Image 1 (cartoon, rainbow, N blue to C red):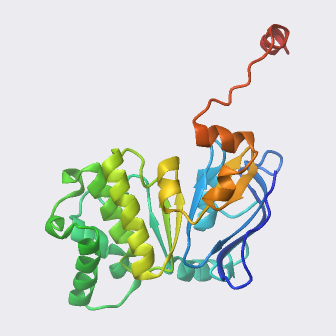
Image 2 (image 1 turned 60 degrees about the horizontal axis):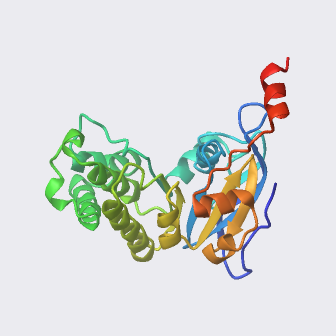
Length: 272
């Protein structure tokens, strides 16, 4: 199951995935024959049923895993063949916000946000503090800079993780399940924040999400994964026009369980 690469000639692809085979073994890959581009400045949503390979793809896009076959090119560098030094430099150009914030519990909020600057730059302490406060202000967290992670609500944790992810002004922001665990109002606020960040910082945003409403609201394009391949990719209008049963079930919140006949059910239970 594959999909055509959607990109106009005038757009620059900051992410290129070609013939990606991903998983744990070549004999039983979780993803196979994956081809798509992510264009500079767009918000790109990755969706699909549980177990469709979204997290596996996410890990390959940020360079945590190398493909079994095929390639992932990020900002012009092929992650499949680059050395560790090059990969380290590429990671300075991206920001990653994890599902549960992934803050250091022993550090207050401002120190958590400053951490990438301390690890990857030689800026003076005051400059780092100013940059961190600017990002916290963008997330409406200026009054919480001395709070510990345990004192933050779910929405505040998400925004804190987001502040840390963009503190170095990355070219690409990757966000895993931004709306997971949030109430609808807080989720909507985070959606608006992501759009504003894209526009203010001129970055590309890639989100992995189960939230259809969120994808409808913020994404320029959506890719739906299923059964190890791409079920559909395109604008929301193109996704809504898709004839894929997976996409139809996703859009209409319908169960995809296949009902077996009596004979088939007995055979499934008794086969050796």
